[in-house]
Length: 143
Image (cartoon, rainbow, N blue to C red):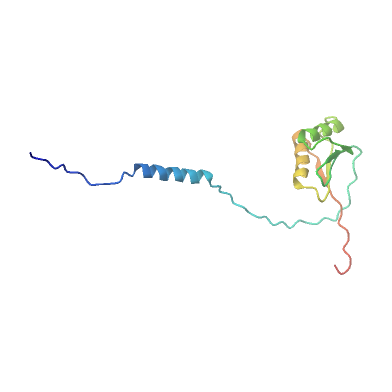
């Protein structure tokens, strides 16, 4: 009996599954990575020493307290949703978006609550929007 030896080719590793896994990992890391650039903006705000403006006879005033509760012309609102604020503003203004709208917020009120009131007025079309402030107290000598 004559046995033939079969020649075997070089022994190698199949790289196809390895490449598939590497591509899957690459896609996973590309999708799960966030590319945000955080920046800081330093502002040097100007000071004003002008006289207070006289309030017109008819205006809409939105008050924001430190807990984030709203009052429109002194009337408290049932909740803090934008639709509720818009409804109260519409009732007071009778749909007249040319009236001046003043937002008076407590110093401890969150920025989000003030922006919510501004957003409600902006969505309704109010263009004469102002934010009420008070003049700072005079500093004591030596401060």
